[in-house]
Length: 191
Length: 191
DNA sequence: CAGAGTACGTACCGATCGGTAACATTGTCA
DNA sequence: TGACAATGTTACCGATCGGTACGTACTCTG
Image (cartoon, rainbow over all chains, first blue to last red; front, side):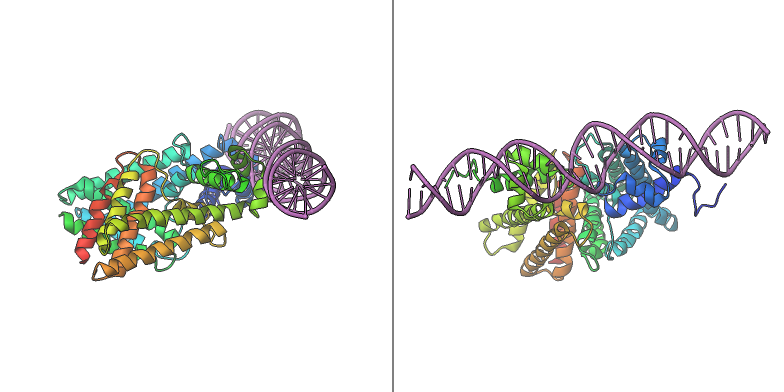
């Protein structure tokens, strides 16, 4: 077993490098040549581990989905049995991140926009993840006693997605800075 | 002067075809060959009218910006001296459009995501347009007597942007259906 | 009807795209 | 030491990318 910081396996290096490049520069903007050269491997190694670029993209988005929900649920540990506080903990951290320069939003949201065709694996993986998020938000709103939890969850989802994209458009001091305030207002109006 | 419905000039046909293709399929996904062939012209005609593909992209986004503000301000005529009703008129129409299948969101928002590099003309044109929108929203919130008009305008902007992208992710019955309700709640809480 | 612009098309460029075939090299474990 | 799996090396494929040199057909004017 090698150290974690310098993965030995070519497939891992490719996966990590693809993650960074796809996220920062966009999926369509990054070619396989750029990925393998930056990962310090060669093209055949990429195609031994992944059937195609599309499959690598799907793997990237599955990785992203996993890391997203990790980040989304992580603050919950500090607020057991308090769904409102759990949600707000994520929201408040997002508000900070999305109001900083260089923020690149949500990789899954970005993927839907880069691949509008519903048949494309990238689109499908991303949409599936967003549906999970929508369900989870509904669950949380429900357990915090909202009158119309579907409605509230969708409202909050709009604010979240708005923060992801607005964070990229306006850098420092963008509209995402008010995210926490707005989520609180919607929650207060519904409970 | 020829009829408007079947433009004779190659440059016009290119501009219109590029608009449709860039918007529906994404900018990076569409090559110049596809544009000219669908427009029924040839590549040199494109490059006589536009310096480069990037310039054509910028022209597309400037066109989009113009059509956007047309659509944004159009309902205002029905509600003179009532900024709240003006805004809500646009919002309610957007909620319907963005909750239908096949919705492709805002071309300018999409462009920012496709071109994260701030030096790219596409990014610059799109960001400029979004800043105009942010200013206009602030103006409207101000004149409807909001306590903290900056804050309210940013909250509404988050909801709008959230509707643009969520409309693409979830088709029919997506979260954008609650847009009108949520905008009203934020306005009510601020006035 | 001649001639000048203007508008357009034919055919092509080098570069890069995603992807592959064939073979050499390395590290690991028995 | 020998065998096997993983990776690297090199060279290549057809397709498509954005972009252009150059020839041709209009149309307007005198």
